[in-house]
Length: 156
Image 1 (tube, helix red, strand yellow):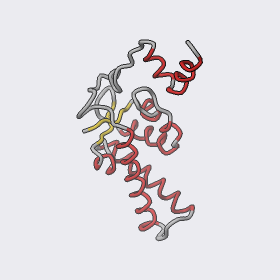
Image 2: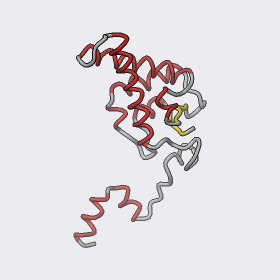
Image 3: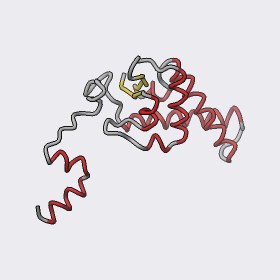
């Protein structure tokens, strides 16, 4: 192996280097028994971020217009986070999706039962509000908040 091959494998990442060595990772969600594409497949990051943006925008709008009657400031930010938290726990824990997730065609399911109970929705939303767990992903594209709550976000 010359220097260019070594640098190329480093630049493309460990997954690409392992695939070049013959390791088969399969598709996202294969280990979880989910289909590769279509309904029930793992939600793509773009859709998930879009749904998150819609939910956050709704939370800011509710907090700024109904609670604080002003835009900006620390009180609006705190209220927005509280509205986001309550909306996430109530909607995911009862119907399986937030308004943003529904708009983007996504649903949160529990891996073992298919339905997210309120306790799992509470854990998932607490971790999502902390932000860092949602930024750490596994090879299936699930955030740490989903792994710890034993949930997965899928397309509907």
